[in-house]
Image (cartoon, rainbow, N blue to C red; front, side):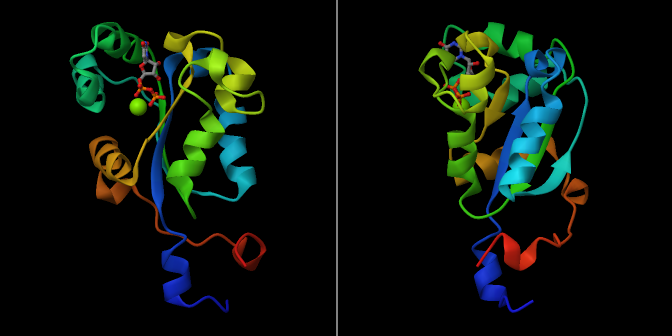
Length: 160
Ligand code: UDP
Ligand code: MG
């Protein structure tokens, strides 16, 4: 490949994306993963597992003073979820754009939430809101040894 290490470094931003219990129940796992794959982003880590409420309370710790926090954490631990790490250029911001607005009634059609959801508390997918949050969330959900180190053969066909 003609990429220098320097050029590749800019394409190595990472975000934490998680399909929520409602997304799993509704059979949308494949669709959501496919959107990130098709866009050209690289999957670095993934699990399929139910996590306890304490873990979800830690994940949503910044929302601890919100009235919906207990209900949110309880729901998020009610069934298996699909936590993932995706990598690529501007993936934190693009991940949020692909998800759509938090409130599905304000999410544009074409986005994950805009295509599949109606209610705020059933918006099927989580995405980190900043590079800083992404780093914290990745560290909370994955051990370093669970992050795969691999290069995609898409190479020059995704990045110029
Ligand atoms: N949420 C809720 N009621 C609210 C606001 C948020 O149930 O009034 C839920 C919603 O599912 C959202 C999650 O809490 O996805 C986390 O809220 P945040 O503001 O971080 O939105 P997000 O980053 O997920 O878009
Ligand atoms: Mg958030």
